[in-house]
Each structure stands twice: as C-alpha cells, then as structure tokens.
Amino acid sequence: MQVPTASVRVLLRLEGLAVAAVTAVLYARMGANWWLFAVLWFAPDLSMVGYVAGPCRGARVYNAFHTYVGPVVLALSALAMGGHAALPVALVWANHIGVDRLLGYGLKYGDGAGWTHLGRVGRRSEEPPTHAN
Image (cartoon, rainbow, N blue to C red; front, side, top):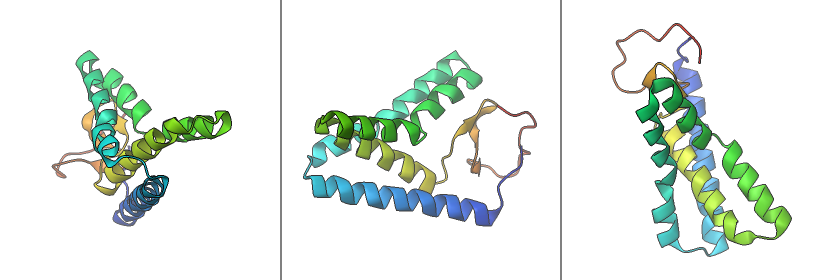
C-alpha cells in the first residue's frame, strides 16, 4: 500500500469538508429536526461492531457504511419514489462520512482499523501494510 502524499490528504480532507458543508446546508433547508440529525449522526459508527469478526470482516462492514454509495442510493431512491422522509437520513449519513474524511478517518484496510486510504490513523512511525484488501 502506498501512503498518500500530504497534498493528496489535504485534497481528500477538503473534499470531506465540502460534502459535510453541503449536506448540513441541505439538511437545514429541508427544515428537518436537528435532534434527528444528532441521533442519526453516530449510526454509521455502529458498523465498528464488525471488527468482532476480525479485522478483514470488520473493515468490509465499516467500509460498506462509510462510502458515499449508500447515502446516494438512499437519497436517489427517496426522490424517485417520493418518500422524502428518507432524504434527511441520507443527508445525515453523507455528512457523517464527510466529517470523518475531514478528520482523517478513511476507508479501512483489512490489516487493522488504523490503516485507511487517507494513511495511518494515530502513530505515523509504522510502515504501511504490504497487502491490498
């Protein structure tokens, strides 16, 4: 695995900031309840329970809930079917992912929760894992 350069990490973090800002503004314009936002915001992190089954399985479960594909599919489905109640959930979900990226938490590798596509979370002195997930 190649560790991303500082400039790539900055761009990915700015991308997270952009997504977080846009989703927060859209959520506010919808007039949805901010208590719902607060309650749902931590829901994607429940995917960390997948690590009970081991680092590889944990990374897969975590990544499934921390990619923009899920909230985009939910939002598009809500719009297509007229079920606008799911749209705030999709915005909160995407906001969570954006804030995670902004803070440097990326998609995980099977070598452990500390290795992400944004680099090592925590200590920087260790070498990156050599096998791909």
